[in-house]
Structure formats: structure tokens, C-alpha cells
Image (cartoon, rainbow, N blue to C red; front, side, top):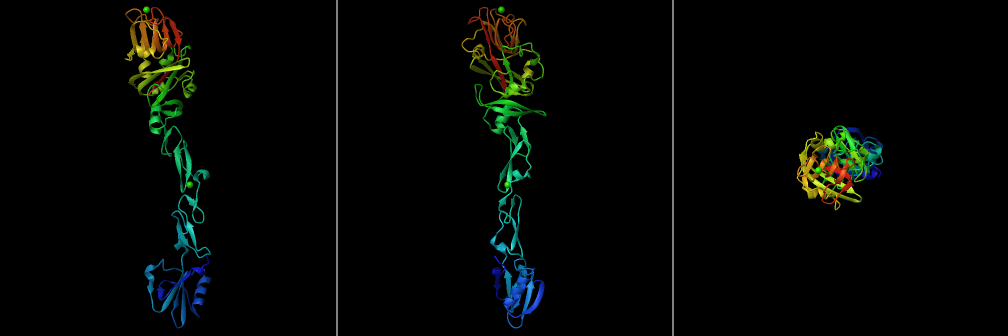
Length: 385
Ligand SMILES: [Ca+2]
Ligand SMILES: [Ca+2]
């Protein structure tokens, strides 16, 4: 658009603003041409008849509405502002310019270009401010920060959960996998079992994985009473054959304990309803703490080959009689005598003692057990929620 095509006339009007220049002209054409040639001129007042005086003005009626009046002795000519057609997009400010285009746009944040119609990709330009644990997603006119999976927050702040339960509830995630859990200042990757795999719904935090054929988690192992981890790599995988002991053993409070035993391809689970500040708080001091699951529930961990003696049936945490005989950090011991001193059978996690001390997780049974002599070593899983 040229400036001339924007020239508009209002009959019998006068704009009362400071003149750039006042001249006498031959006709209206000469007056408007003078304005066109003056770099600051945007409008003119021109005498209606007689000796034609012509006033060149650097302002317009839109900027001075109170100074614009009807007037019998003059006409007013002005360049229609190109801004009237709203060329500037996305809430940008249109500024009148005395150039060929007639305007320029002052873009508001997030847009660029002559008419401010181009989105700025803040993520690509690196002008975004997201948390280091968030990803930047470009949007039209702005951008969004989204915390990475396993983290929660608004993208400017991203926190990790401290338990899988929390991750499950806050993040709304149903997918089992490795989540970063925060323990004080430490961030530890832990495999979270999400949803009901046999212990009920929700997020389950792994604490310990025991290979019953290894001595790592024998009843007498210091790992039950200290706050050292063991093979935390094994905490990044699911119900496999790797052993592990994670910070969650002493850091994670819970209201339920999930116990699993894998024998061959079969994995069975049972749940203990028990509130505690940690597994450590229930086990490390060696004090017996009872549970009330009943013998038959414990037996389902092993399956049809399970065997126990008929009497005693002492179950819980740090369950033992005479320390040479069957004992379990979590489990049940049984005896052929009607007392718990000399138990020759057990189902449990972190076990030891007669009849076979090398079995640290699973089922041991001899001497008048209800399904004969058994030495079943299991892969054991202890999770909390
Ligand atoms: Ca953008
Ligand atoms: Ca006995």
C-alpha cells in the first residue's frame, strides 16, 4: 500500500495541533503533495476557499480526538493509519510508521516476525527456564515445562517421590519400571511395581530380594541389622534372580508388607498388614514381633509341595526358638513338640538353623512334617507400601 492510497478527506474539519509548516498553495493536490514529501507529515488542514493556506501536521486525529472539530472554513486530509486494519497479530502493538508499509509491530513475548505471527521456539533457542529434571515443550506463543517421568511438580520445580506409593499416587502412573526415588539428598533409581501383581493395587517399593540358595541374607547376616545397601543394581529390575538390599529397607515407612516367593516359574505372594516406620524398625533389633496370617497363608507362598510340622506355629518378624534350630527374619517356624524351642521346619525370608542352615529363603521341613522332608530354596521378594 502506498501512502497516497491511504489519503482520506474529511470535509469541513480542523485538527488543532502544532504545525510543521504553513504555506499557501494553489489547490488541494499541492497541499497533500507537500505533506507526502515531508517525512514527518501525517495530516493537513486546508482552507476551504479563497487563498488556500495549507498546514502540514505531524500528528493525526486519532491521537488528538479532543482537538478535532467541525469547522466551516477548512477541510482535513489524513493518512489512514495502516494500524486500523490490525496487521499486528498475537496481542502485539501496532505503531504507525511513515514508510511504505505504514506500520510496524511491537511483538509481545513469545512471538516474532514483521506481523508477530511467528512463534518463538524457546526450547530450540535455549531461552526457556525449566528444571533440570523437566523437558521443554514448545507451544504457540510460549512453552511448557513438564517434569520427566517419575518426577512430580510444575516443571519449574520437579521433585521425586520417596516411595513408589507416592510416585503411583502423585504421578498417576500405572506402569512398572525404574523410578528415581529421593532419600534425603540422594536420588536412587528403584524398580517400582505398580498395580496389583498379587499383593493388591497401588505402588509397591522393593526393599530386599533374596536368593535362598545363597548365604547373603542368612538370618545371621549383618544386612538385617545394618543400614548398608547390597547390590543396588538388583533394585532396578523386577522379580528376577538378582539379590538386592535398598535404602528402602530403613527409609520407607509403610502400612503393608508384600512377601513373594519364586520357585521355578511360579511366584506366590502374601500380604502382612502392618504399619511401621521401616522394615529396619521391625527387624534390626532382633526382637520378636508377631503377625497373624495363619499357617495356611504362609503355606501358599510355597505351593503344593509345602511341608511343616504340626505344632508351635510361631510367625512374625525375628521368629526363633533355640538359635540352632529354624529361625526366620520374616516367616513361620513349626515344631513336632508342643513348644517352639527346637523347630525343625519353617517358611520364611532370612532363614537359618536346622534342619538346613544354608537355605536362606524358602521352606525347610523334616522330622514328622505334614508333607515329608523338604528343602525348597526360593527367590524371595520383600516390598512395602
Ligand atoms: Ca513458543
Ligand atoms: Ca523339634
